[in-house]
Amino acid sequence: MTAVPVPVDEDGIDVGALEATGARAVLVTPAHQWPTGVVMAAGRRRALIAWAQRRDAFVVEDDYDAEFRYDREPVGSLQGLAADRVVALGTVSKSLAPALRLGWLLCPPALVESVVAFKEGDDRGSPTLDQVALARLLASGRYDRHLRRMRTVYAARRATLVEALAAHAPGVRLTGLAAGFHAVAHLAAGRDEAHVVAEARARRVGLYGMTANRSAPAGTGGACLVLGFGNVSERAIATGIAAVADLLAG
Image 1 (cartoon, rainbow, N blue to C red):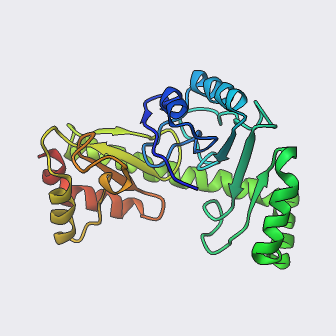
Image 2 (image 1 turned 45 degrees about the vertical axis):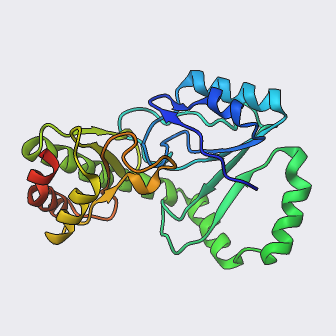
Image 3 (image 1 turned 135 degrees about the horizontal axis):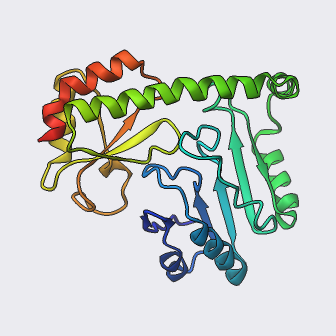
């Protein structure tokens, strides 16, 4: 396989650019694109399915962050639009614990035999006890209760991030807030992303630049920061933003 980068805009993946690559498989995170946080628009979803049908291609849908939405009802899956063309992936490593390495996929019938054969040859099976415990959690309704509780926790942390930036660096635009555990902060034109990150670390605040996630050369697309709030307390978020506010505001 060869990985081919495809542009993403405010509506999601650029299907026209995807078509031009000649690829016959694409990996997408339509519920909350990593790292931009964009939700794939309905028109792009339809265009992507049409591309897969035209090209005899497959869409690999990573259901990333779909459980944690804040501004809207959960968006429908691509797999529900074309079960014969979409491989839907899910995991509990984000919703329960990173150390719990359990995932699943909904597989188009045409791929089942080869996927089963590959899985068997790759690791001879997943941990049985972990699967049984997860099945109990799902059947009892406790998993759903856990998701509801954590959605409230993450929403509070998200609100703290928004409020802290509004108070200390009101000129910084935030996007990607509809779901998940991170937002994207857009810095003013001409700002040096690497300099902001380095200066923040000197103040013991960890910031992460968007450049590391781009296929384009450094400096393309403007300076942006990926601000994670999933494993940071509300107090730490507020204190951290206050400590680097002048760097963010420029």
